[in-house]
Image (cartoon, rainbow, N blue to C red; front, side, top):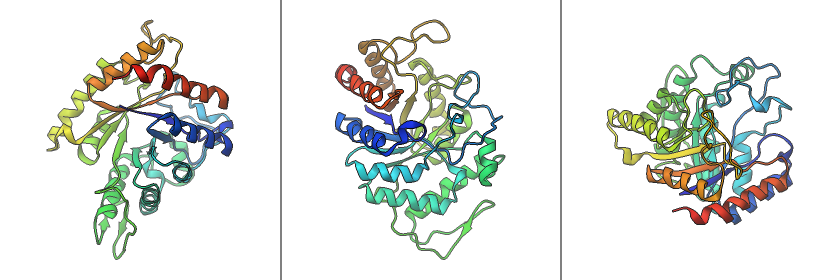
Length: 316
């Protein structure tokens, strides 16, 4: 199983020295995946409900800092040699598709083929409005842009004509190093997200902390996986074509309680956390992103080291 950690993209640890320390030590410690999140602007007033908290409040609204995702991804690529580079997730409708495809292809080339394209539709109407993106049709736009990515990354003479984008008479070079293209993983827990996986993608990358569609136990993940497999087969594909991943924002060495009053998944002793990860591996999950963020650089590095020293040796 691959384990991933987040590269800071907002707040005080976006200082270059902090980013460099987390990225270089993360790779040296053996983390296989480094993830970069996405916001372009943070509106001062947000009425949209954040999907991943009980109250619906967006934690990034305080301060409003956010580094541009694809620029930061390239920066991380330049500091590393082996770790996979995951957009977690890229809000697909936020960027003109040819420009986004070009940036990702360039980073894949320069990194030696290490990019994983995590894709999402977005949730914050105010951010869409600020940058002139189409919030109401974001699902259809996301599907269209993913199709464009795959065309320009694989075809000799790509052309496209849709309500959302049209082009012809172009050469798209260089294409990504990975063939046929970098893996495309879909974030999201809904049936619509799973449909997008089945029809367009190479992997499913849900977040475990959605209170409306919680995936905070292996059993809940397994039930959702079985629903995904039905959609994959209905699309004429095999589950063997789909990578299963998981973003676990609630990883702590101190035991936490869930809404039922029992131990929160992926919290507590090293053995308990390793058992949880082993259970995910048994149902086919191959990549898990854990939370190691602390309030300071040293606390973050300590959490990164604690996992590798205490939990990793107990994993299958």
